Every structure is written in C-alpha cells, then in structure tokens.
Image (cartoon, rainbow, N blue to C red; front, side, top):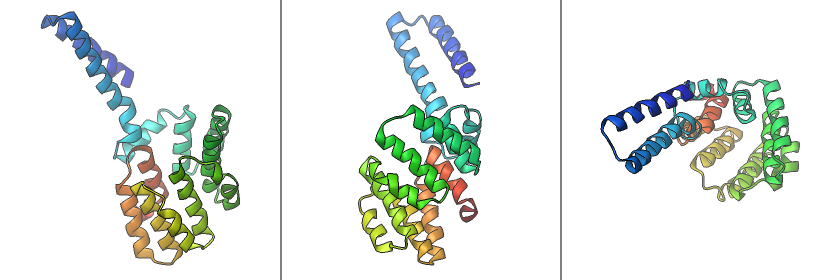
Length: 205
C-alpha cells in the first residue's frame, strides 16, 4: 500500500508540474524533494519516530519477513520461535563482533539468561550500550552500586530511566519503578517505544 501511495503521489505531482509549466530542472528538484520527504514518512518514520504503538505494531506485522522486524515483533509478543529464528538469521547475516554480541545479548536477555549476557557483553559497541547491558547484569546480580556507577556512562535518556527502573524494582521501590518506566517510555519513539510498551504494558496502563 505504501508503494502504491508513493507511486500515486509521484504521478499526481508530475501532472501538476506539467500543468503549471514548471521548468524541467526545477520540476525535477521539486519532485525529488517531495518523494524523499514522503518516502521518509512512509518507510522511516514508523521505525524511528512514531509514537502510536498500534501503528508501529501494524508496520511490524506487515514486514515480519524482515528478520529485524520479526525480532522486535517476537520480543514484544513473546513469540519464542520468531525470536530464535530472527536471531539466527541476523547472526548469519551480520558477522561483525559488535553486532553478533548485541543480537546474542538481546536473545539471552529475552530468555533471562544472565550468564550468556555476561559472556558477550564486552564485545558490544558503542560504549554506552555496553555500559547499559553491563548495568543490567549488575542489577540482576544485586550489585546496585555498580549498576549506578555504570549508569553514569549512559547518555541516552530512555536508557537512563530504564536502568533506574530496574534498580528501583530490585530495591523493592515499586512506585519509583513505575515512575521510571513511564519516563523511559515517554523518551522513546519507534521500535524502541514498542518494545518498552510491550515489555511493561501492565505498568504503563
């Protein structure tokens, strides 16, 4: 449907430019500008900037053949087979150690296997992502001081609040835990917003 919309807009735009007798160079520039903007909205916006969780999920459902989208949808809906299949495909496709480590870590966290997380986390890049996942391990092991110290290396606002929520939950502070999850959710957009919503759906309502 998005390709049909894009084609329709391009067709209408061509007719309008012809009717207005816009010069060829200017017409080409205007056409390309409109198409780039529309393409960004139709194909990129849902991934990075969309706030409506239902729209994000609809986008993922239609694109589950893509292993990355299949992974996000599977994690969000606890579909073990989707998560495993998508992870296997991504590991075969991306051979860089940092990406391999990230996909393995995500899969291990999904399965609550902290030992596996610890075995791969040192390879994760960039540094703030490494610090974030190391902090998650520290929380799970009950080392909250270490988690807080690692949290100082994190610049991403949603990561800071997500980590703070984990620390609060481990410390038994339910109100702070819920408040921090709400803040993490509000700081996210696109796929990350979707995953946080699905993971903490009960606490966000």
